Image (tube, rainbow, N blue to C red):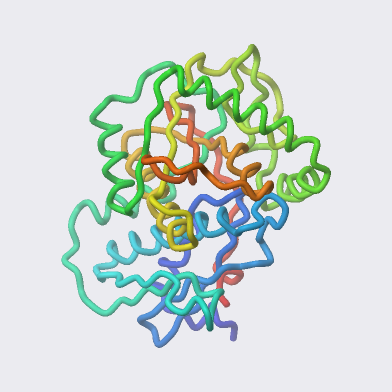
Amino acid sequence: MTIAHTLDLATKRLLVAAGEAPSVLNTQPWRFRVRDGDVIELLADWDRWLRVSDPRGRSLHVSCGAALLNLRVATCAAGREPVVRLLPDADAAPDVLATVCFAARRRLVAEDREMYELIPRRRTNRTPFDERLIPVPVLSQMREAAACERARLLFLDRRSAADLLDYAAIAQEELARDRDYVNELAAWTTGTGVPAYVQGPQAMGGVDPVRDHGRRAGSARFEPYPQLAVLTTAADEPADWLRAGQALQRTLLVGARHAVSASFLNQSLDLRDMRRRSDPHHRSGHPQMIMRLGYGSVVPRAPRRPVTELLA
């Protein structure tokens, strides 16, 4: 009998929810270890680490932070209070990124169930968005969601967004000249990574607000003024990356509640990490994610790992 068969249904539901999180190139670089029935350890799956584009492991930690947030949300929806420790023993057990203990009962409220039901509805959307502006109250809720996880969500005006798109395009060109990067990207844009059916179309015209994964099919005209946001943290260490991932996923779930879609434009951040550059000190913090937000069509879900693969 496999370990997966010995898990109770409630624990399997928690792990399925955690595995629905967004991750860099859909690598899903996480595994889980269940201890004594009331503790789950979140582990880094270094076999799925992007060694070229993510030499510090920053994107891996952000991805795992998003899975951790889903695990917390699912725990609350099950009527338990999650007690989380980040990097509980970084020296002796560096693979253990977090532990979640389910010691106390929790009174279930409507928001717990709603957030849990939003997990499978959230999708990365690389199709054109329409030109509707996201209402200010929705932006405020998304900003508050990030703040709950000790991060900041900064919404850019048109001029700043245009500048950031230029930076992304320049970074994309430089990355395309790096053979190791191109090979790594190719390895994760087939099969279980980011297959062609979720990459979206090529952009027509001068605005291309979607990252090029190399296999985009067809062409379409994207919104002329993409709505961009930057997620930042006060510091830039592994614990901050995990918090950024939790903030990212809480923000995306709140957005999904209002039918807001998102895709990512992290080329300049990848190039920064690959070149071992550091951010200049800025009061807004260290950028961890760059997002394009808006209202798009329904898109398919990228493939997910089964629970049997998620267990350490």
